[in-house]
Length: 390
Image (cartoon, rainbow, N blue to C red):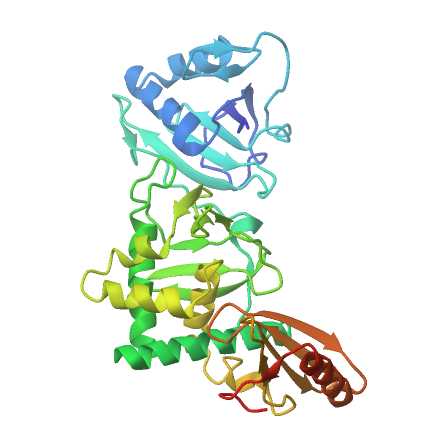
């Protein structure tokens, strides 16, 4: 998809305006690659090639191409009178670059759908055309996609999500205790591996990327968790999009950066823990045994987030209105569990040490319905599990 821009020149010299339409200028439309690191960089390069003759540069890029450009870098002009660009004509461009010949300056404005024509950066040229700074150091408000509302709380969206988090936490605690680790030490170790994986990934044209935060795509409401100095924003349970997976079930994560680059990254557990060195195998074994294979990254981020928000929903918040699980097993290996809560009952299909599926059902008489369902399961060959309360 094209990112169109506009190339213009002020009619009079003066200071940089706060908005693109606050001073009169004339210009032409530019179709491809209108971003500051593309068209902006090309204009800076040409000022150097013109050895500071900004008037000559304006004649080349504006006066000699009245119909506008398909690509200035490729020297391809548009063949017909299409879109235009001017102070009150920025609806079809994402960025505007306006020369002030007298002040020896090039101003940049954001005119895309998430902006309001605001000034976002400038470079000045010396007598030989060298730019200061050498490229646009753009300070631009992020688009709404990159500025989701961050939830400060840890309120569960459903009892199923609360139970799932509690089961993950319980498995991690079990396996960490067996390995002689605290949960905090395990989370810190995996967080280091994840941070290194993200920092050293090839993000678009940047390798490694100058990351400050990454976003797991999903709803624009997100939870925030710090992975070292890296902030990861990810959607809460109930508004998540499944990550792409390989045939093996391991994940390829789709992430966005503050620069609006997106990339599909290999975040298999073996790849993440490979950055750890000593202790990598222990962390990997716990990830395999305690976290689900599908969407393990969400489960891990939830676990890390839970350590940031103690006393909330990580198992302790299952609440006094929910009774213990009543667990039953079948000779064919199936595990079925149920418990009642206020106004509902919850089914758990699968063992707590695996990746169980939860089903919640509203009920006016949950205890009575639970007893009836248990009788049906007993008739089908299920028996009470010996290691959990019945």
